[in-house]
Every structure is written in structure tokens, then in C-alpha cells.
Length: 217
Image (tube, rainbow, N blue to C red; front, side):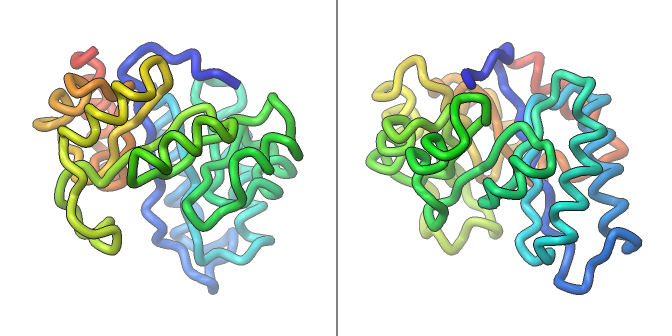
């Protein structure tokens, strides 16, 4: 399912604030839905539900509710790692990590109608994801960020440029420490868009952030 969005593509990733104890009545469950609703209104292109601690049942319920919000919009909804839940609950796609099933397996199982994104941290991983059937990749961390410290030092803009050049024509979204001040550098390095958690976390100012980023096209 090729991405049809105008550049820069904006990819909101939820904060992962939910826990194993979260239910559909919990405040954090409702907060995620409110964030998704705000993102749709602001014109965010892609949303990833990245709530790794939820039970499968609650994640399914959250995805179903989120899909109802995005269904009549141009925003596409993905679920982190759980291709089965994404397909069953009506999401548009799945976002695969380096510990997930290979993109080729997901593509063979679910076909061409599902959108597949993949997290990558090296040129080799980026090439493998594209060749495996992913529709786009997220590459990073480009800049210093606490949430991605486990992956080591930032890859930097030069490595981002190398990946976008090697995968010319294939959507590469920059991730990691992205702000409205440095987003343009990522786009100048060839990124098709921006993926972020913190950048899109302020629901009150989300429309302003989106407008500023879209001006970088």
C-alpha cells in the first residue's frame, strides 16, 4: 500500500503511557483517543498506537475505537508490532520493530492492502525492510533523545542522507530528537517526513506544530 501523502509526511507515535492495569475506562485510554482525535483534526498523516504494556484485549479495544476516529479521514492508523490486532480491529497497518516478524512474512500473510512501516537503525536494516515489503521505514535516532538511548549514539544527518540516497524514491521518515527547529535539516537530508513522540505530545498546540512542519515541504 504505497504512501500517497504529500511531503513532509508526519507520523505521530503515542507516548506509551498505558500499563497492564489500563482498561477502557482508564484516563490514559481516553487520553490516547483524544490525542488521536486531535491529530486527525490537525492533519497528521500517520498515527502509530505504541502502547506495549496493554493487554491484548485492551489494545484491541483501543485500536477499534481509534479506527472509528480515523476511518473517515485521510489519516492512516498503525499498531506497533501486533499485525493480528491491526488487521482484526480495523487499523490500516502495522509498524514493525527489529524484534517483530519480518515484513515479508506479514506481507505474505496479510496481503497488499495492509500498510507496513518498519523501524530501522542502520543502512542494512533499511534495505532489508524495503526488500521485505515494507511501505516505508522510520530511521534513527537522528538526534540525541532519551527515549532512544538504548540504541546507542544518534546516527546523525550524514547517515540519514546516506540511507535516503541509497533508498532513493522509498519513503524514509526521520526519528529521534526531532523538533520544529531541526526538522528542516532532516528533510534537506532527503527524509520524506518526520516521526516523533514528544514533538506531537502537546495536544493543545498540535495544530500549530503540524502547520509549522508542513511549511517545510
